[in-house]
Structure formats: structure tokens, C-alpha cells
Length: 274
Ligand SMILES: NC(=O)c1ccc[n+]([C@@H]2O[C@H](COP(=O)([O-])OP(=O)(O)OC[C@H]3O[C@@H](n4cnc5c(N)ncnc54)[C@H](OP(=O)(O)O)[C@@H]3O)[C@@H](O)[C@H]2O)c1
Image (cartoon, rainbow, N blue to C red):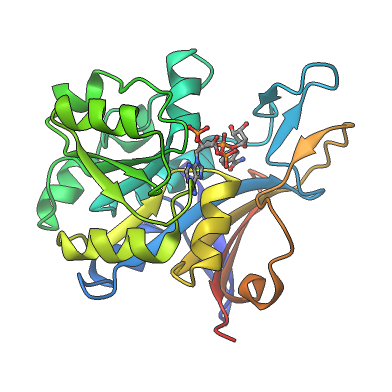
């Protein structure tokens, strides 16, 4: 039987099919080049783990049992609504090492084959553009980006290694300077991408880019899947890093769905502007 969800908030409660639940949010139409819609997603355990770290080496791994087919389908629906994916060098390094799957294209995974047609029916390009944020510029682009004709941009801070920036430009890549230090900053990055006509920007990234967009006041919505289990473990990562966020971390719940069979809540939060 096809998976179903119970939407608990806003009420009254409503039973609905899981497939299509996030497409119904219409994210591709919520932003504009002047104010792109920026969204992120995470899957967390009830004890706040998004990744476990090896106690000895510090190497991170995605905890088995954190994710399931339900949140993966919804993840693919979020991805399908993006004009542009914002990812980072860490993901490309994990991809090259075979630690993570390639999720840079739409419609290539079984639970989301329909999403390629959905994009075309909704007037979107067949595949999203991709931005790679990095300070070190130590990464290799996967060949799938060229094979699918995706526009690729590299985002850096002004203090990024000049020789590497020059090498990227010589290789014909678009380099976006967004930030005065070594790290990419959220507000200038989103401003530049809006200026290039992108309206919906999905953070296919981790804790640092979430922090970057919250501090920059440019995150529009956080999609958070809470898996109903505890992991424990001596060392782990949570969805945010860096110093205390203060008011930049205040959120308002926009909606909440319950998946009783899959044992997950799907919540959406929006920053509360101080
Ligand atoms: N459960 C989940 O939903 C979920 C989601 C995301 C990630 N994770 C896991 O969490 C762990 C850590 O996440 P992660 O490695 O994806 O992300 P991360 O630790 O936040 O960032 C990794 C790399 O991305 C680049 N980067 C990020 N923000 C940047 C910025 N503002 N400016 C310049 N470069 C920036 C840096 O690359 P350079 O070193 O090249 O400068 C950084 O080392 C991983 O194990 C991952 O699998 C889990």
C-alpha cells in the first residue's frame, strides 16, 4: 500500500498520500530573483544526531536506520523544486570516496523517477544548476554534472587560495566571490544567485552552510525529519555548528506531518526575524 501521512499542524488533522506532500508546497514559485526562496533539509534522531563520528578517528558516517524510503522520497521532492542546488566541497569529497550517493540530478533514483517529468510540466529546466561552496577548493567535480549539461558555479570567500581560484577560472568555471573572509557568506551568495535569475535555492549541504544562511538572515525554510529513535554514541554531529546563534536561531513551526509506519515526523520551520 502506498505510504500515507497524517498532517497534524496546521489543523484540522488530515490523512494524505506521502508522495506529493512536499511538491504541494510549490517552492519553485515562492521565490523571485529579487528574493530567492532558500531551503534546507536534515534528518535527525530524537537525540539530535545527524551523523555519528568514529570515537578514535573522528570520521563521520550516516547512522544506519536514521533515514528510510519515506524521507528519501520527500528529499527528492524538495530537490526537484530547486532552480539551483547549493552544495559544498565536503559532499563532493564524500562522493568521490564512495561514502555517499550521487543526488545532484533529478529523476535518476527509483523513488523519484516521476520528478523529471514534474519539473518539465512546471516549466523548470531538466536539471538544476549547482553551486559548490568551499574554502579549501580541494575537490573534484563529478563527471555527471557535465553529462547532464548542468551549469556549475564555485562559491568562495575573497580570501580563498588565489592560485586555485585562478585555476578554476582558467578551466572555464564560474567563480562567485561571496564573503570577505575565507568562508562563503549567506547574504552575498543568495544576492548573486538571485541576480543570475535563480528563484529557488536548495541547500544540499551540512551544518556549516545551515549556519551560514541563518546568520546571513537568508534561510526561508528548514525541513526537518525527526526519526523516532535514539542513537547515543560518544561523538556525533548535530545540524548546526559554530558559536551561539542567538536570535538567528529562533524558528516558528509552519507544519508537522506524522508517518506512523515509518516512525518519523516531518516538520517545517521558518526563521523568526528578530
Ligand atoms: N542527517 C542529515 O540530514 C545530514 C545532512 C547533511 C550532512 N550530514 C552529515 O553531517 C556530516 C557533516 O556534514 P558535511 O560534511 O555535509 O558539511 P559541513 O561539515 O558543514 O561542511 C563540509 C565542507 O563544506 C565546505 N563548506 C561548508 N560551508 C562552507 C562555507 N560557508 N564556506 C566555504 N566552504 C564551506 C567546507 O569545505 P572546504 O573544506 O573545502 O573548505 C567544509 O569543510 C557528514 O557526515 C554528513 O554526511 C547529515
